[in-house]
Amino acid sequence: MIVTGDTNFYRKIVEDVSIKKPWKLDAIAKELIRAEKKKGIRAMMGSIAASELLSHLLDDSKSRDYRSCLKACKVMYNHCREDKNSFRLLPSPQTQIAKEYFGKINLSAIKTQQILGVVMSHVAKKPKSKTITKFSNELTQVKDHIKDTEQCLINEVLGMCRQIDPNYTVWHLFVGDKTKRAAYLNFIRSQTFKEQTACAMLIAVNMQLTQQGIMPQTPAVTQQMINTFVLSYQVALSLREFFFSQFLTPGFDLSTKSRANYLWDEQILYFVDKQVDNEDIVLLTSDKKMCDAAQTCNVRNKVKKYDEYITELGLAPVFQAIKKGRCSFLIYRLKRCLRPIR
Image (cartoon, rainbow, N blue to C red; front, side, top):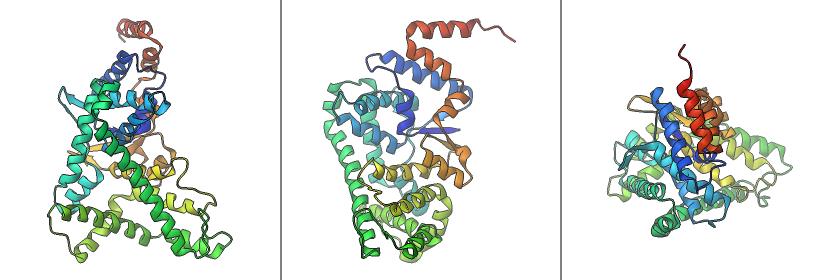
């Protein structure tokens, strides 16, 4: 089995650990890998989660996000490391779709992933300000990409709302019009909405490949892919349905409370119910809406919450001992070694 953790999984695992105690971060990663190995589990890094963590390394060094993400980068990389010079990386959705539907290698997406991996490895090995300064250009590109993509989503949603509701005011869609609200909700829950989403994603990947000199697919061929796409990525589309339904909630401001972050959650769900080398992928996340989307599509067993996974591996007490200090950890290990054989 393959597991891939989202941003919050790794931030949760390093809670209450000081960046000034790197041995604790190393011990957490080692114990996690040890427990997984016994169950035939290996971890692979998702580029979206890596991007989200790296993007916060340009925040104020005294901020909670900076400290949390710096620690999480170290644990994520070590968790997914193959050997001293390589790590296991899941293909991005764009890479995955290019290969699955067009039979092509998305060189642009792969190059982006490779850059992320290089930066992540250096940050993990030397989580210091000098490392961040050295890769400031790459980190700026990551941060700007996330910011620009989220702003693009906000602008597109605002444009859609203005187009379908002549009386639209910012973040208030079809207020007082029950008939149009019901019609909108029916559309969001329809097969047509899923097909339009699938078509948009396929066209976007097709355009990336075209920019790399690969001839675009004909509209007829793209249309044939849509039904397969909808069936293949039901979990991601389920989250998208929920998200777009929220625009009917008065005051649901997409520009606040990191709501545009939904875009990355949707893309992470592209991994759910998939395989790598005939091994199932299990997503590690405690995000309620992501878990709900998996439940709706009857694949909740392919998503595990933090507490579920750590308990399943029997790691709760050892993590607690590590976080308390070296002495507590050594005592815990000694007790394990002295445990009577039954």
